[in-house]
Image (cartoon, rainbow, N blue to C red; front, side, top):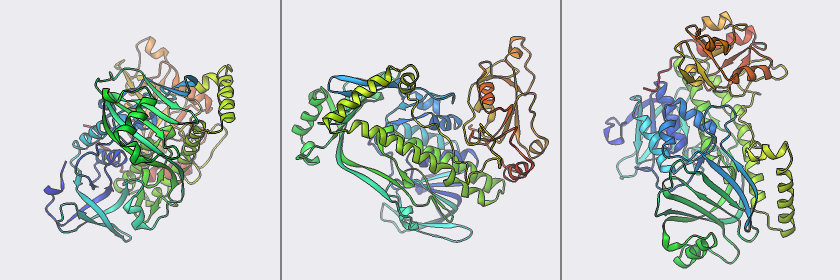
Length: 541
């Protein structure tokens, strides 16, 4: 990894400039580095920001990090056995688990200490000589033409400004994004007027990584809030600031003692790490692209906090964008492919925003009558044979589905089309009879995954599309799995294809299904070939 002190020339020419080095920017840098794309990451702070802003991520982000070869290291400091409770007074009216990953092959919601997450992501970048990290710079100006983007950088140490030129820019610089402002892109939306107060503390013990967590929404009309023990002994407690209170008062020793006592926490038995006040913002940029510059993460959309989707949404953004940049830069695909980024991603952001706000409304009810009705209705729903298990498994959370209108998917959509959905990730067994996760076999490539009755179409094979040949579980029973063939002994892929009335899927590098065998057409062969041919991916060495 190269720091700014190692860069001698006043202008560094790269393919992609990333502004911002939080989880979204660091994930993007890994994705581009994995593909050998010359990348520079510009960051204002010299070291990892110490405050624990985000605390959770879900299966969609975990699958991306798995593909980068980083998720096992992350899990070493994460807690994956998480239970979520909604509590009113001394009674819990709703409990659920959040470990469901909907056949994605990785844990569902995990909790972590954000600086540890960022440490793993930044260390991952050290594998890729094509990525340069430039800490200690602010982006203060941006100009672009038909060929490139030039960003003016101001060093924090007071030395002269410098410029950096790339073919594309990804703004991952947060809700107050300087790049978004320089592009003149509006960020309409609203904020919830109620101020909230957050205390990050550390107990004088380490919570074991594998210990189950109890994430609790305090759904009390007198003082709604959140209580979340985190790995490594960290603990987050959040409170609504009531009328007559100020953040300044709450940050005094007396104020902190009183708030913690409301949760049964002894001020003298913990270390107060940080405390701060904030308000909730719900905003989406009017456009996520202007010319050669793209917005990702909080720069594009500020999510309400109740569903813990801030980090995961940013990771989803760059996972969608970076394989397309790879196709344009390395395979000479048409730059129009990049126009599909926002249409594919925005619908999911809106769905999760709405879902998060529904959770927030449950937590922040103030009318005592409405609160009693909420508790009664939810307890009754939990007893229903179908709805109860769905709620308990967090099944009401929207599945990650990409927008297909304006997206890069098959032209034809038949009934039960799988277009725009993830291919499941079971364990599969190859000729050496060693089980591996499917994504290891897919290897971030365009891949045809099909049973013997649906071999790869010849035009796709000629274009360089990879093929994974599926066999039925009987092949493992007789120890007869041919080279290049794989068995999903639990039938996960077979069930997914059955639901789609398909026997084969064309899968994009981001693990989303382009089309099934019963939908794909000759027009699709030509479209995909134009994106695939010449595209080269490097591994995660």
